[in-house]
Image 1 (cartoon, rainbow, N blue to C red):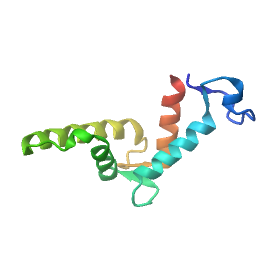
Image 2 (cartoon, helix red, strand yellow):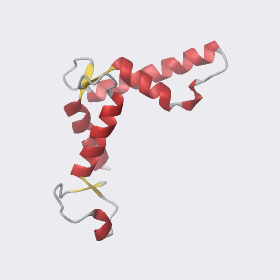
Image 3 (cartoon, rainbow, N blue to C red):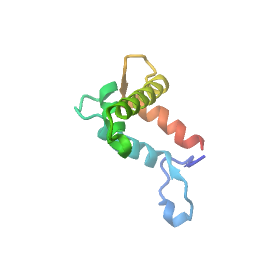
Length: 111
């Protein structure tokens, strides 16, 4: 996987010559990403917050015609639905920090 198993490894990865991140490093980065997604600071990511984030991250959303924009919007909403299906473990229609970090830590450490 991309993670080393020692979450509390005292040696920085640069000094060991390894490209693997520790679980702690991945969790810290995921907390930062969660904070960027959780625009209202509620501690949960809503469908709207996730959709707006993906819209901003997709530069090509500035399509020239309304039909193409609508198609792109539907694609983004479908992507967000897939994300929620995978990450919203308790089916509250909101993603908590714990859900987000648990799922994506497993995703990143699996590869």
